Length: 270
Image (cartoon, rainbow, N blue to C red; front, side, top):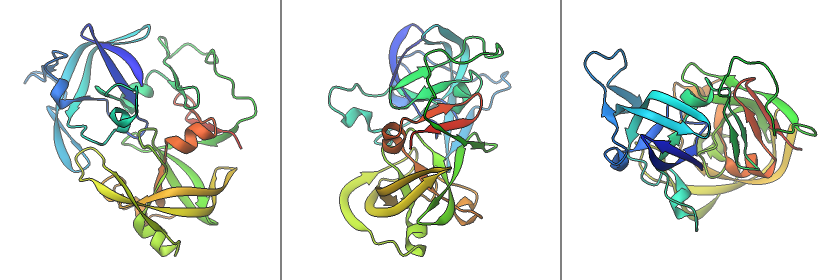
């Protein structure tokens, strides 16, 4: 999580590459003195997230390290259990999410293993990002949808597929119907997962013989299996190749994932 200041008050924000817009927990709206969208504003008063509408508010000042954003629109949402940080010992509850609407314009670089986020104060100035070492890592191009979702090409047990890069997902999750079509055995668990505006769902597990992301082969990985309807939209689950699931935090961290939002590249260690 990232330490931030919202209208002068300290906050903890989760970096979520799967979130197209930044958000603040609904119950913290008054605490951070967020202001509503006025009738004269060109911004929408409400936006749709996972099939439900949420109100938009304005953070007059959002400070992330040396970067200060003024009059930054955020969505107020009930985060509930959709972000797991509160369940990790010694880690504070999350106050909100840093989404793609901030990460892309600032040409952010996120080092998942080192849990380091670098934002460019002057994004138009050319040059390498200091403190980021990509040596020994494989570059995987990222495709970005109109809704600012990040996808990478890969394969699952030899079948071509795409995965959404989602640092907000605690684990890599495959869509239940995709796993059934592949006839991959699954086992029941006591785990559950949820996303913003969606009901909590049970998680099964499956062992994938070979999961590839770009040219990086990940052998013998155990992944979660869940119904991802509502998270992956617009028929992408039935596309060619299909969007089969979410590339989550455990693989990104374990394989020294670096997400460069400026160059739209994911770097992974074999």
